Length: 188
Image (cartoon, rainbow, N blue to C red):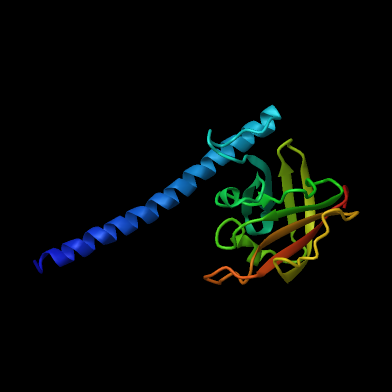
């Protein structure tokens, strides 16, 4: 009987490791499908779901070249969408349009790179129609989730990237890290 105890723990360990490996493999495969769907969306001009049962589709690519960071953003900010990438928050502007385009993502996955973005960094956002807009990071704030002060109908051309704060927290909390960026005028 005592010989079975190590075997039992070995089986449990293998099962836990296998589950973790499965989740990471699924996430990597999802990114391949998202890349393919975004490329097809840009080519065809129609929103393409990454898999048949998806409740969202890719709407933009966010790139910060200085730190070699890139993320595909999805339509909407539901929990299902945020599991696979940043979400374009409903009722906010599209990149390049007047107002504020707001994207939210998890701090420990798709927006992990926000901790490395510096004031002055350029952020490129390519929409699903293939148009690219360049923004410059100009400030950051830490705010309560229910008191962000973001006005999506502002008169400028702005971009907000938001994630939970602090970056290294284990549990979610009420604070959000908000990166503000302003669109760079053509020729600037």
